[in-house]
Length: 217
Image (cartoon, rainbow, N blue to C red; front, side):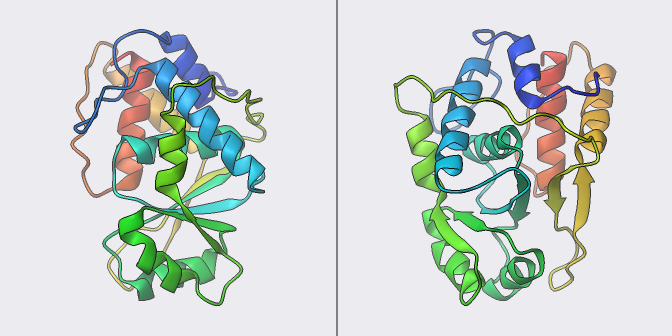
């Protein structure tokens, strides 16, 4: 894959109106155009709220197509995606928030209490993730978005906090690592069609989806 390959470029190459890229269990499937326009709308809303390139944004969200749109939006904005496991206790989530210092924590309504407890007394703001993703699905022209330049491929694009409960040993991922792993997956399955059943691994889900989109699956 080219060094400056971006998620938006992969989606555009896929063809905006081709087969669904993401199949929802609770609504219509998403095409590449839906993903491009939805992620652009979310990115524009986050930018208007003060999120800038390089800012860490924590996300407390169940694995779903909306979670993917949030990640794509943050990548297009140039922000750092910091996934929090929605099964964590407030104490565990707070350890990551205080240790990683995100500027905002995007939480689904069902996880709002955990988010507020995790961010209490810190500079991190809590925002409604559902409102962002709902706005992205409205039938209206998407906001214009100049994608953040790829920049140095060693820029961090995701911080994956993995490990046993109570043990915080976050893994710093770079765009180069992500592009290489996703590209390898695409090369291994050039004609593959991949079903992701949302296993409990954020990085695995993102890599699987990215590899499938890149390969046309």
